[in-house]
Amino acid sequence: MGYDLERFVGYVNEGLLCCVCRDVLERPLQAPCEHAFCSSCISSWLVYHRSCPEDRLPLDVSSLKPLYRYMRNDLTRLQIRCVNAAQGCEVVCSLENLHAHEDECEFAFVSCSNTGCPVQVERRGLEAHLSECNFRRECPKGCGHMLPSPNQSQHNCVAELRIEVEMLRAEMMCKVEEVRREMESRLDSQRRHMVQKESQLKSEVEELKGQLACLMSDMRALLGAERLRRQELAEAEVEKRELLELLKDMQPSRGRPPVEKADRERNQGEQQTSPWEVYSESRQQQQRETTFPSMCAFGSPASPQLGDAVRKGGTRSVTLDCIKRKSREVTVI
Image (cartoon, rainbow, N blue to C red; front, side, top):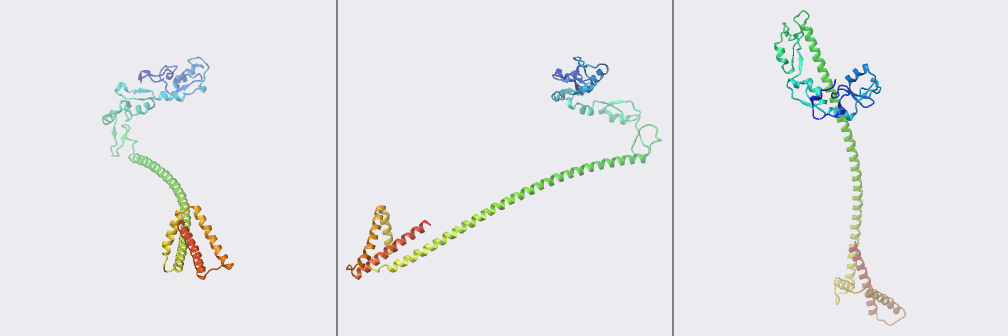
């Protein structure tokens, strides 16, 4: 038999009703023709019939199968009242949780635990009944056990206590074993987690080492380039000083401006002139340098003072050009 339809709260789909008893399915089974029945109803039907009670198609017990999953889900979500609603229970729960509630319902009738007592009381009043039950008898020797019957000849306090101790010991051992297994599983999971963390940290450390090695090589290259640049700057500075000293030695004592002032004026003049004028001036200078030696070679009249002046002027111009190039190189560096 299925669940009484009147116990349900809300609408119940027609497909969730048994084709035999017309109540809501209890432990449902399904035929190949997709008709659903309670297991007890279809078993009783197939004892006397070999066909489906709905469409009369051939049916056998072996051809029955469980209900579709979506229909089972719809069935378990139905809201039903407690079977002890007549005694005062007002609980409404899902069909899936009905049996768990009825096993602990305070309004359910239970039998007295004392042997020989025929009384059935509600679960909420069982303790009060046990305290007043006429069949309740304690051991007169003080072991604390309840005697199952007025006959005490078969009661052995030592044996009862030993049995109770063994039961407690077995229960304790089971709990200890459960705790041990739980601790071992936790330790194993923590050990695996630590191993994974260790491997991850090792890979990160190796990666950082590689990055540090790359940075160190880059730093060494930069330091080498910096040392080379400083060395070149020092060499250029030394050459500049030597050229300045040479200019000071070659400069006449009177009648001419200092070397630095002449260089500054010459640089300003070059900056103001155009590239074509610079090129023309350099060509004229080269012609003059080639003309004076040729004139001296062919015996052209020239005084010693003029030759000295020409030599000094050519050396001075060459020196100034060298100084300019060095200063430009230093500025570029």
